[in-house]
Image 1 (cartoon, helix red, strand yellow):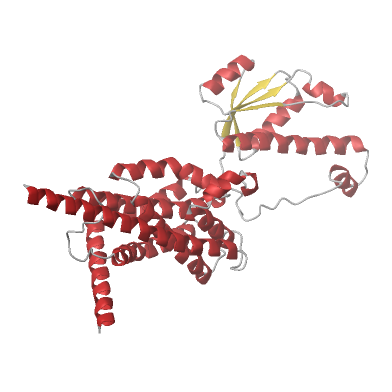
Image 2 (image 1 turned 180 degrees about the vertical axis):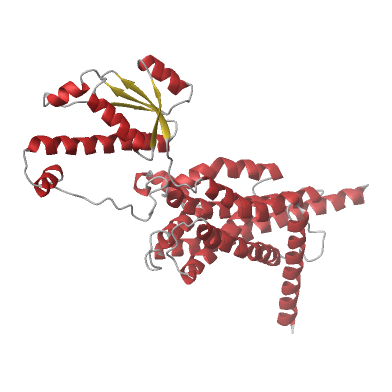
Length: 408
């Protein structure tokens, strides 16, 4: 009977803490914002900004010292491309640099005086491309357009001087080795489909850590000794019911938020969706569990509500790089790869991108799944230890307060 009695007490304490944590989430505006508003709104805003995938009509200034038919043809072809727009003509490079410095244009196309002359002398000619490197997308548009136009004009020139008599011979002369450009895993070849799936997974972890940290800060503010666990209240006498009660609260909320982030948002903005529901479920459950226990461990290390916000904002960008999505995983130093293993977002983002964007199977992401399970177990043990330590500190503070009151 004692076993059933203890089990009933554990269950009663767990449900009490779950209800109390749910009320705390609803009452605390900061926690409510990070648990509900940010996961709902922020992915929509982020995805809407990058919904065009690529940049178009990037303004460029022309410095044409050649004043030739060939240079004018090059300029017309660039202006006709979807990515570049000829916005200004400058007399010299000093005027062009002034336009770039005032952000009226994003780059300069320079044609030297001997541009056409060198071509007709059977010598190599050069077009100068100067780009503002402040934004890589505009640099790519300017440089790739100039390169594509030069290749097209090279083909025309080769065809004219080849002396071939048939159209087929001219095609072979211009393209002796043809190729097909097929963007893999990103049909639009754009920024949104490339990096936003990893950002969605990172948003899930960051909002969870922020919400749990703010909730812990509120609990400390309500406790006169600024401890996380109020041992002077009933149902707070054991560590495991506290952890499981909080876990149930966060897990119930983020089952819904997780489905919104990894299934609904990509469908709304037409991101690649190659994974099945069952595959996503297998990966997302250990990921959410690992994030919850990770957030509970972090919440015990911050003293004030504001600290967790500063911490999360500081590490957000490095965590995105360490996922290996926006920067090649093979180029990340071994030390930083070891640091990245501490965060569930590293393996969660890799598994989700490979499943949903690359069409991988569950066997292909088995290592990431195992790492997430290991992280969930390790952070659960750490959460038990740090909460037990918080319980010890709170009891010692209460005992000291009672002793001082008796002395008085």
